[in-house]
Amino acid sequence: MNNQQYIEKWLDGTLTEEEKAAFEKTEEFKSLQRMDAALKHFHPKSFNADEAFGRIKARRQKTAKVISVNWSMVYRIAAVLVAGIGLLFFLYSNFFRQTVNEVQYSTLAGETKSVTLPDNTVVTLNALSLVTFSEDNWSSNRNIKLEGEAYFDVVKGGSFKVETSTGTVTVLGTRFTVKDRPNFYEVICYEGRVEVKASAEPVLLTQHDFYRETGSAISKSVTAGETAPAWMNNESSFSSVPYFEVINELKRQYNVSVQVKEVDTLQVFTGKFPNNNLTTALQAVTIPLNLSYQVNGREIVVFHDK
Image 1 (cartoon, one colour):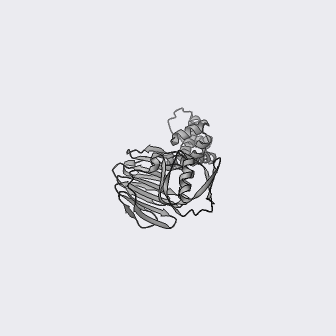
Image 2 (spheres, one colour):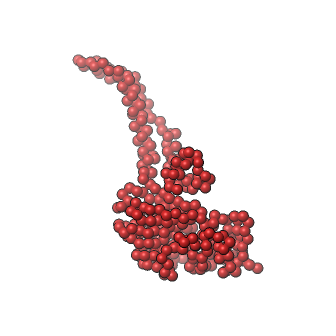
Image 3 (spheres, rainbow, N blue to C red):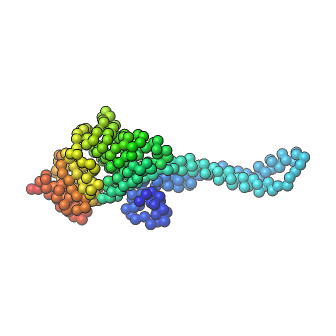
């Protein structure tokens, strides 16, 4: 669902609880709140139409020719127009100018979504992710902000930038993924070349290279030759990834709470789990490490098998 649909359903009062929670995280919702606050504090300057009419009438009495006009009515109308123009300027400065042509797309837990940008570049979002971009001058300013994880199939053209809280990825035309989660940042190049600017010096990736930051550890290596991320085929795949990120991805895909007891979450995990079968997924991330789990509704506990 795009932001316009969110706003329409919000105005109609038909948002579900999940949709409302997702909408309240967007910039559009924050802008609507700013607009509401702005209207509450807007007070146009006072205008005394009778006093203004008296001054103009005194001047006009000095002229030789007088045209009969209801000036009192004219200046009362002018007062309304002045107030209206002031209100429009105030709203533009504090609301419309900040949100014009800004587009956002987001996903819920366990959801993926493909979005086509103005240049036909395709962005596919993984679960609990958000992209924001401006349609203004897109052909000469292809910049997009990402929270979470997304796969990009970029149409060749000018510079294309993906900005996250951790770093910036710059390309011309290529296919790659960017994943920016708490304590985990990863860029994988599937085709072409990408430049990564994050915590270290800029790094150039070519086909099948990846760049990863986990806490203070930084690494650059080569993938097994995949042509696209596994999650686009309803799987989550990991290669020497800290166990805490495996558990976090499980939570994002199934919208569950997972508690890990007395398990080294910094140990690395290599493997995969399906995104459409929770039981199989739990077995896939516990059995290889000799771990067990218990399920109580949507709460899961992972622990060492005694």
